[in-house]
Image (cartoon, rainbow, N blue to C red; front, side):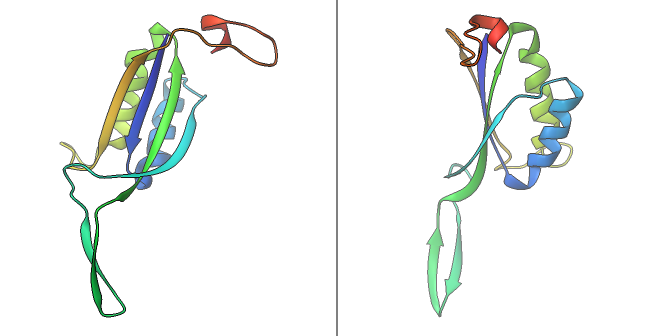
Amino acid sequence: MKFIIAVIQPSRLEDVKAALTEVEVFRLTVMDCQGFGRQKGHTETFRGHELTVNLLRKVQLQIAVNEAFVEPTIQAILKGARTGEKGEIGDGKIFVLPLEDCLRIRTGERGSEAI
């Protein structure tokens, strides 16, 4: 089992969800978050004062999958989150972590059956 964390542009969320549905990944958690990396933020003018905004709005997806779904999930996120043919700075990151155990609270199932 693996735990996949993807940080993407908020505007790409619907495309990523559609791509995940195509590969039969239906369970995910979505959280709003902020961060910065190579984009470095931008400046805005508010009431005549110039402000530097270095934390940009992002969306974090958390997906637990069995081994057979790891690569299809990664490819679906890449397909939905990439801007244009080659992508752009700020499109996001995907992290793949080992998942030691999973429990379904309702039934008490454990491991891959609980996912």
